[in-house]
Length: 253
Image (cartoon, rainbow, N blue to C red):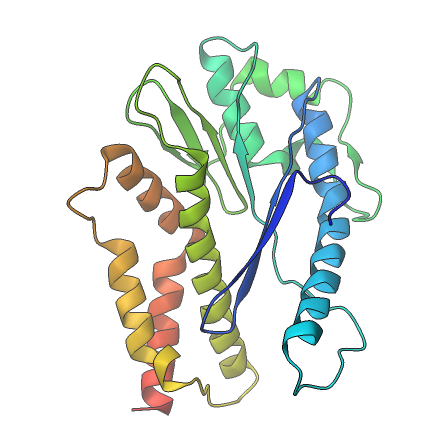
C-alpha cells in the first residue's frame, strides 16, 4: 500500500496502458505549501507506481520473465477538489488558477529538492490576480473549475448540481490512457520505426475513441460538457489521436 494515500487503484486498459489513481487528502496553510508537497511527492509517487505495477505484472504474467527493475511511469497529472477555503470573490478564482499551475510558486531547478520560490510570491499572485494564459476555466453555475496542462482544480457548491470528483477522475483516466497510447505510437515514429498495434487497438480504435471523446451525449450535463472540452483543449489529445490514427493507417491499412 501507498504510505500516505487514502486509496490507490490501478486501471489497466486493453490497449496495454495502465493508469494508477492515487487519492490523498491534504490540509495546508498556504498554496505554496501544497505546491512544495506536490512536487516533492512527484518523484516519490512515480517510483512507487513503477515498482507496484512491475510487481503486479510479475504476479499476473506467469509466462513473462521477471522484471528486474521498476518501470518508469511517464507522467503525473493532479486533480484537486477544493473542499474548504477562506477566499472570497476574485481570490477563489486566483486560488483555483494556482492549484492548477503550482509551478509558479516553487523553484524546481533541483527536482529532488524543490523549495518555495520566495517570500511574498503567493501574496503577490493574489494581489495582482494570477491567471495562467493557457489555463481554461469551466463552470456552469456557482461551482468553478480550471484546467491546465498538468492539473485540474474544481470547487463544487453543495447547493447546486455540481460535478462529482468521480466524474472528473473518470474522464481524466480515459484521457490519460489515450494520451499515453498515442504518445507511445508517436514515439515509435520519432525513433524511425513503423508503429504496429494489435488490430483491436489500431487506427479504427483511435478513430472511435476520438469520436466518443469529442461528441456530446444526449444525457451529458452542461457542466460535464464544458469540463470535457476544457480538458481536451489543454491536453491537446484530439490532435495527438488524429496524428497517431494517421500513422497507424499508413503502416497498417
